[in-house]
Length: 303
Image 1 (cartoon, rainbow, N blue to C red):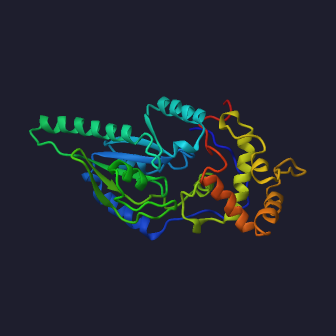
Image 2 (image 1 turned 180 degrees about the horizontal axis):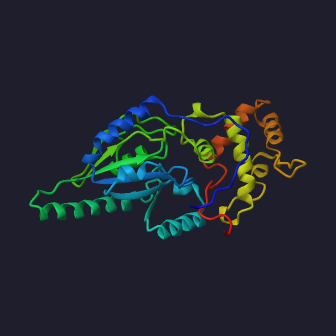
Image 3 (image 1 turned 90 degrees about the horizontal axis):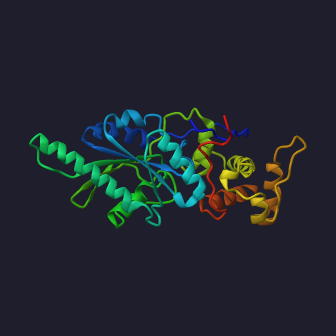
């Protein structure tokens, strides 16, 4: 497994498993037998945190396409490092930016090729050809619906920059070659890895009711400090100081003074409202106003 940067943030545990996800997972299990191909979508900023522990059970012997969406939000060297890492796991990954349409055509062609292979096998058994049936699966807000709209070239499913928009399964016809089953975002019933849960919160890949914005912002500031020390991450030194005009100080023990920065930044930018400042910081990251930042790297330090 790739290493991740450790965070030591005093914050309430992050847990989120709303009723519509539990209901959708039951419906998903009932529809799996109808599916030939699983298109798994992950967030390129956090490929491991958006990997579902039940995925292999759902895939079974079906074909699997791994999509890393939001490729525009990570530095190119990180993309190259993840491509090499997945290749070493004998896994091909498809990089996409569903918002701009980058990589979507290549993904569609890969899915259609899977359908061709399917129909060759069906013909060998004396069966008529049919479109490949693909399940679009992934965590909330990783861009599944936006990807489907790009594939269909029109808005056929609702899409928004927040978790929980898709609430039920729906089949979408994509020409004569591909039928897509759009599923709501799926999450483990319990998030035991709180490091991963924090990254889900930072990337807005989990419902905002699950976490405290100020605690998430403090975690993000700490993580930025760690990423600045990793050349592969491409995070410039003093990023928040450049963006907000307030350098991130250092505590007597050596760690970053995230609380002091949040208070000072709030006084300058949000009339002293630290919650608004925390929300602004997180939104700036999520909208790439801080630049391309990957929160996970395949290898951070030599073993």
